[in-house]
Amino acid sequence: MLESIPWLPENFTFPDSMLSLVVNTTLLVVVIIILRTLTARFIRRTVASSELRGRLLVNFRNGFLLLGLLGLVLIWGDQIRALALSIVAIAVAFVVATKELILCITGSLLKSGAGSFNLGDRIQVKEFRGDVIDQSLLATTILEVGPGKTSHQRTGRMIVIPNALFVAEPVINESFTDHYDFHVFVVPFKREDDWRSAQTAFLEAANRHCLPYLEQVRKYMSKFGAQRGLEVPSVDPRVTIQAPVAGEIHLIVRLPVKSGQRSYLEQSILAEVFGNNEFSSKKTEKAAAEEMPDEEEK
Image (cartoon, rainbow, N blue to C red; front, side, top):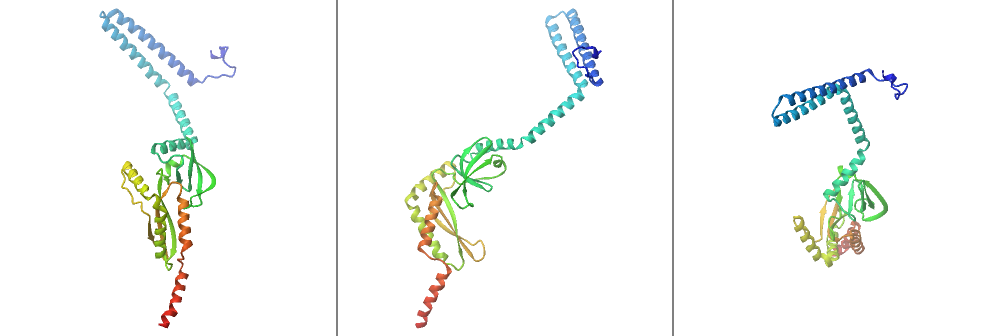
């Protein structure tokens, strides 16, 4: 019968299982239509109350509609299940194929919602460190600062960081304040060097360089701490001591700086201290050798 239909292709074949489903669906629709028609005719003839008649007609109509939907689900259950599995497989394949893009969008929403950084801030993510110059939905662009984590000079290279990194990696923001920051740098010495004189010299140099704006820093940090609900840190320069390995003394210099002047102030203090002083152990041995003859003459 199907082969006699003129608009079907010549090689068209209709599966027997599909034909059975179509026939069963047609029979179901016909039976439901007949039952609904007979039921409605019976209600109109036998029920005298118009209000009750209208309620029964609506209830039976909805009941036959629900019965038809259940019948269709039972008839086409296997095909619906196969279709659902196909849709799930396509969705999984789409998620796997676009996982990085989804992570980038998620990272963009995360850093925006958390307020991790703004344009112009100096950040570090994994080994990438630099000044933020552009942000988009998929990537963040920085001008690299280095080499290493202690340098503050731009290398001239631009780095495009996928926002997916912000989902799993911590972000270090070195410019969380707008006008003043704290800067820390380490000066290593040998245990036999005159590190005590170096500690005094670095503290004096740091105080001298920070004196012109130290009071403004105090006011700014007090205001910043009150806004954030934080304890106001001491802004006075300090030089502390660490002994990371045997035979070495590290001087940790911490001082307040104006934003954007970390490298300038650090280099100024280092040049001043090491240009005017000598802290090596050779100088100490030489001074001790010069004092020896004087003591012998006595």
